[in-house]
Length: 288
Image (tube, rainbow, N blue to C red; front, top):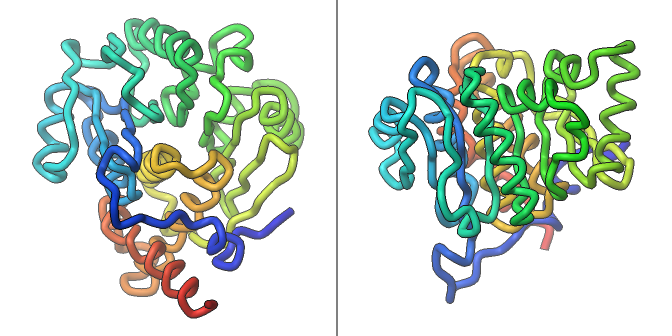
């Protein structure tokens, strides 16, 4: 296994050129939140806006959109007519990546819309970042492994991995996750203590930032938005996953050092993502 640390990530950092504009840095679509869980959409969108991508559009319910724009006015909005995800936004081709799942809910109409999204993303060759309720929906579809668009990133914790692979031991499930990445040409982030990133090559990266302070509701929503934004920004799926988990964990480490592991929220995590970028850029400059 390869350790994800600053020396691994520094050579992979993308640069921003002077003569560029927002459309050079990718457009991420986030499909998240519902009337009962608007906060997940807020957290994922906030994290995506810290990733360096050029544009972020949130497709969600009226309540979630209002909560998001109050905190992040630079987000673009796409309103869902129902109280949960039930229709795929138009003109998907304008998006580089789609992140889907946080706070989505499990209504019957949501499953239908999710099936439509998978079909359209495959047709248009748009990679997905799949988390939370999107993974749960995926797990009940027959032959779901064949429906994941190439270049996608899955971000399950062990409970979600157990739903995707309901038989066998956890060790067997991890082996199946690695095989999935090779079979589907996708990347899988196995969230938890020393988060692991499984690659299409069959290899594994292990992250060593982060700690028990991240074991709070909403932490995964932040990671989904961050990885989605990095992927839209132009990073490869492998580098977006590795950079995302390291920065996410580093933000948690900084908050733990300042406040203890008990006394910070996932909303605080969004506000500390910049610290990971700064650490990598500073160490990159020092190494030259």
